[in-house]
Image 1 (cartoon, protein in one colour):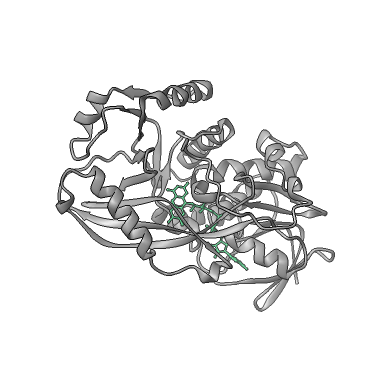
Image 2: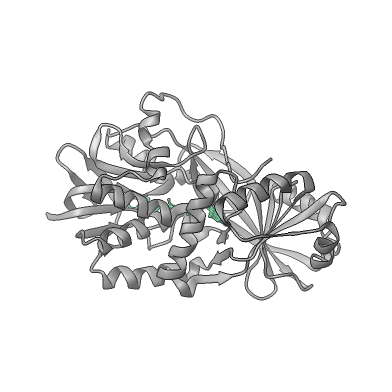
Length: 375
Ligand SMILES: Cc1cc2nc3c(=O)[nH]c(=O)nc-3n(C[C@H](O)[C@H](O)[C@H](O)COP(=O)(O)OP(=O)(O)OC[C@H]3O[C@@H](n4cnc5c(N)ncnc54)[C@H](O)[C@@H]3O)c2cc1C
């Protein structure tokens, strides 16, 4: 049985960045992933990364995460900016938040917005809030970049290896074909954390697991590179390679377990999104649905993540409950958790997202609470 200072369970954006920051600090780190790095939700996301969020702490996390992607995985970053289409009265709050966080932005008048988005109908009460420094993360190349980084820092990576259980008292992780002992374990298995913790009798994580989905279209007309979010309908769109568009919204399907995630987007989702697109596109005949995919996300009863020690288990840590915007906040949260493990100093995020706030929570969240937009 090998002994490690830190074992990270799960190789999505959280696991990979946690392993990266821990190894950078000089810890001996092993990362164990059931599939290949990025095979969970992280590799199935739309890659949109904006600072136009609602909670000031999320804006800070997103801003810092962008800096981290730029310095650790610059080849995977596309500097696109981000455009939110919102009623003019709402843009006042957006401006206050962005001013408070020191984020650069420009407000586009109704006329400017309509000129820019010539392929879309803009309501006469809408304006645009454009944040030019926002990015898109190309997850297809992100994980090969991160793997190179982890290899160079001496992180031992097991792929296609599932953690089957966790003995918290003995500090042993059971994996297919082997066992590892650890000083600290970090649970970064996303939507799978809950079942792993329950199966190991460690903690009843207060998370809700749900399927998140995205559609892809072939597009015959010229659309802009900037990802667009329509506040009114919650629809986001992002150009995806040449002549393709990814489209999604907050449509969530609650699941008993991640293994129940349907492989394809649900009929109701396709119909709902199709209707919302029809209301906005000037030439819907130029758009042809080519497919789409699904992935599993997790949410907590207050819509905020879990970052820190698993209650009652000083050697086990968790980051979970990132909802549908974990790519935006994951790297900064991972960095804060590693700092806490190394020094005992809790950052604002570790204070705010301490799992201990749910020590006495017995049930399961009723619904998905996504806090990234106003409506
Ligand atoms: C369709 C879709 C679109 C999205 N779009 C965006 C977006 O545009 N922007 C954004 O910020 N976020 C987006 N998200 C959300 C984002 O993908 C997640 O919040 C984020 O990826 C969560 O990262 P994670 O590392 O916690 O989880 P994951 O990426 O799911 O990683 C967990 C890993 O743990 C592994 N694992 C599970 N069980 C075990 C085990 N027993 N042993 C070992 N390994 C195990 C899994 O294989 C998986 O690779 C989207 C999600 C989906 C599904």
